Amino acid sequence: MLVNAANMLKKARDGRYAVAQININNLEWTKAVLQTAEELKSPVILGVSEGAAKYMTGFSTVAAMVRAMDAGLNISVPVALHLDHGSYEASKACIDAGFTSIMFDGSHFSIEENTEKTRELAEAAHAKDLSIEAEVGSIGGEEDGVIGAGEIADPGQCSLIASLGIDFLAAGIGNIHGVYPSNWQGLDFDALEKINGATNQIPLVLHGGTGIPEEMIKKAISLGVAKINVNTECQLTFAAATRKYIEDGKDKEGKGFDPRKLLAPGVEAIKQTVREKIILFGSDNKA
Ligand code: 13P
Image: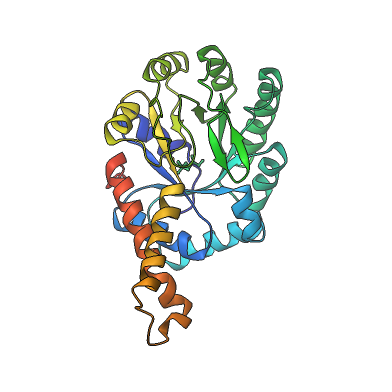
């Protein structure tokens, strides 16, 4: 069932669990995430970066595929189709393309420009019943060529952006995309506490969900985080399982020519990663 993400995240915040945003790259990824969310009776958010959408030939193709697959698989749990780190232009395009949720990432603009654009896009999104996430303080690391320095968001700016009618807020607290370096300082919980206190119970979003230790995930959820994004971990487990299948020579009989067989171990690995995340975030049986 395709829905916007506003209610599922309000419920998560009240119930002290988080909904997983799993980024998708193709049909196999999408099917694996939908089937696993259904298996665990969990709401889920499918994240689509601009780069992934381009790879899949555009936002409309993604929306058509996800809608058809959701119906074809008889998915009963709530599913949001969400633009990840969208530009102003991509946010507008997704509102028209059939997405149910967008993230406008105006964190690289001045706070004035971020405010102005976020306010405008919140109105446009809500007019078509989409939910909207905004960002303050860039998330570190690189995702699809977008590089952030990993600032800690300012609670005053978070309060301002949260008051613009958005549905959930991503605030940088030392989290980064990709694999964490060995000298990573960890999440800044003092900052998270201040941001949580300044943003009137808005569900908070933690990007960079790959590689954050379990106890930090749980503490973040206790401080208002209701959505956690995971991308890199699925890519790593998919690649490792595919590589192992080939190196083990399981496709010796020539079955490796069949893409359905070749991709099967990777798909199983994605499902297992998604299962682990849903259970760790506590959203199983919450649909
Ligand atoms: P990871 O790269 O840590 O999985 O983070 C994904 C993310 O935050 C997508 O927005």
